[in-house]
Length: 457
Image 1 (tube, rainbow, N blue to C red):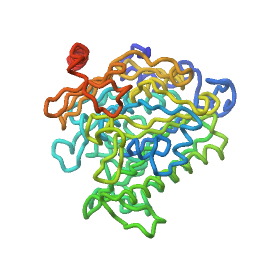
Image 2 (image 1 turned 180 degrees about the vertical axis):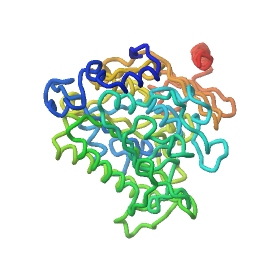
Image 3 (image 1 turned 135 degrees about the horizontal axis):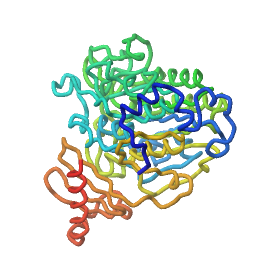
Image 4 (image 1 turned 30 degrees about the vertical axis):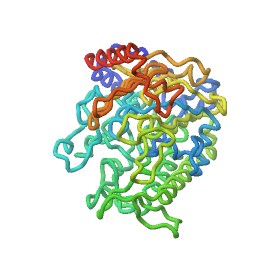
């Protein structure tokens, strides 16, 4: 855990509203950053690093070339090749909403109200008025208070009932995208409902969603090149679109030999990922063109496992989206920071998306208000290949009634039907051999740790 000032959120925000404290507390100001781009901060520069955090949607571990896929993703792969690639990295949940909550808050979704523990669905009465609590603090809010320009481009999925409780209300200066879980890639609607926003205004745009998000990301980077920025680029690809006539994968422009819409079609799914990779290449090229590569941390992650019903793949891992088998929660994670992270690094240490919040605050010099974080600072793991901190990871998926505990090499899983499993996940990452019969004591300890954690919430 990282140290936090003993302030309430209200006191924290009130103090910053008066102005002037940010420079003294964090050691820089937005005004001074542009003048010190190549001096002395964190590895040779005074300017705090920019952050481009790319978060794709329903892209399985076997849908990234560097992780063994047959799909060509050279631009995505370059992030790992030029930085660090994790092999044992998790997201907070196997479904969209709680996974995004965990990443942006640095906290388990179990600390939030119950709706955030599963995917929020439009037209579900219990979901339509769900919103983040006033005391939630996103990584964007912390960075904004410390002089960063912040943007969320793409998918929000943390409340769709009102744009008043969208990204602009939780630390993001700029929002371009949609609130619900999915949209039509061309019409930008949720079924027939308009869903495309620029900040708090519904807008009409022409084009394929992935391409529009890329273009907006490039504009944001160019506009803010002289100040520190945090860009959360939450592509909706390769998640299926929510079309007026049903749920479909939607082929991007430039693939005349493929159907415009499909369901279980690996070819169309592949085209969506190739288009996504091209867009990410455009973002990376912009950083290079503006001479920002050494000033920018680039992170690539996926929000949860792929759904086999729509062409995705998590092979050779067991399970898929919506399950706590490895295929649902073990995700690609790659981080590039040229000049700080040596290229071609592999990290087999265990990590989780919750860890990015404290790691990024460490790297940027930002300070977190008095708030319980569940992630840990992975700086030494990433930079120096240090051993991972000793801890448990806890997972609970309400809709399938599954629970999981990770403890070093061990993974305990209680399945929907009550069957218990224990795997040595370092030797058996594909979860083929249940070792619980000969390791009851280990399983009992892990169940006790889970119970203690849940009771502490």
